[in-house]
Image (cartoon, rainbow, N blue to C red; front, top):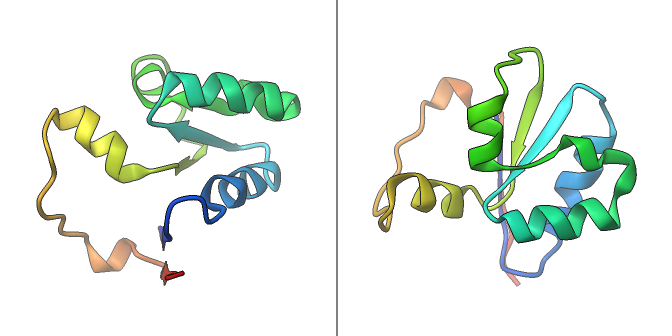
Length: 102
């Protein structure tokens, strides 16, 4: 797992879409249906691989895909319905962490 931490409007979503286009066995999950619709219009060639997190979770069980999550903090907040105060991650699963400050 790679983790990219960057400020708002710094190109995170664009990097994720670029990552998606490198392999047909990849999908991207987003925290907002509206964002998915907007991105599907902007990127029609990969529109079928862009999902609202809840739709993906309820409809897809294909374990042979790589999943990219945009704004994972927002997805976690929606999943748990409250502010997430602390997150612990399994170090063995982390390939790299990229933290960018403006």
